[in-house]
Image (cartoon, rainbow, N blue to C red; front, side, top):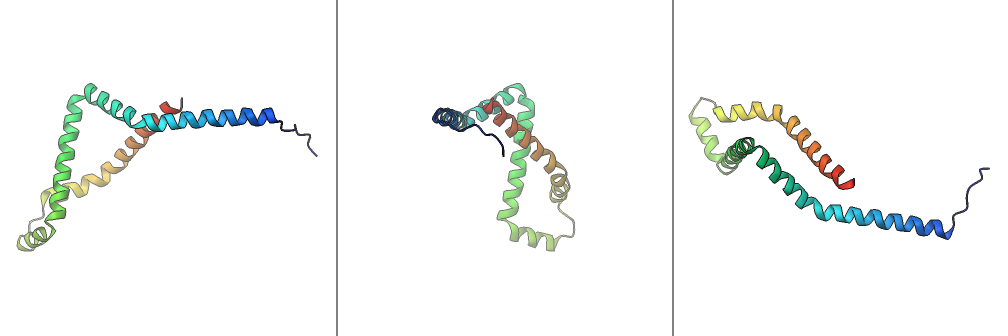
Length: 121
């Protein structure tokens, strides 16, 4: 049988204080996360304005294409039936999205990881 140190009331009080301190830091991190993310986002835009503009433009084009596809699905089906030529933009997106998705998700994971690791330290 192992010799174990008996748990005293002082040990419980210290553990309780450490848990309360950790919970307070967690609560503070959760409250500050949105402002830190936006601050980091704003800093990135100010450091790389051309890249940010290009990303915004490409995002807007992608959103426009997705919305028009969703809202005019019937019109697209009729147009495809009338013409035999494939839609160039659709073909390009169907080739680019599978290639870009892993890089985008990896970038987002690293970005969130950096935010969370900065909050915990």
